[in-house]
Length: 66
Image 1 (tube, rainbow, N blue to C red):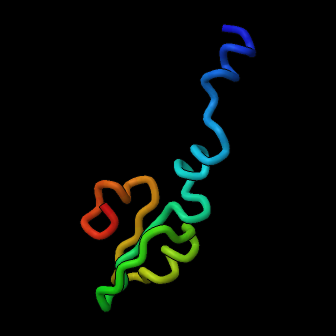
Image 2 (cartoon, rainbow, N blue to C red):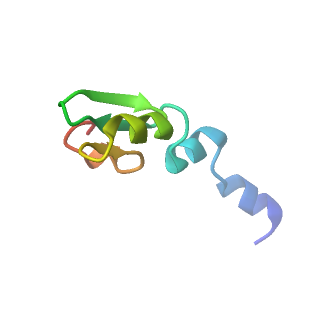
């Protein structure tokens, strides 16, 4: 496979963000039941805390952001 073949199959920036949990691709459910989808990974982790739930690449299959 040459470089042009690899380049044609490479993910674009938006697709990479979705996989890596970039801007606006994550969600959370706080211990109080508040649900927010379309936030950054840092926001999701912070708002969920130890008692809540957060997701990025698994959000589509979650009960709160799916």
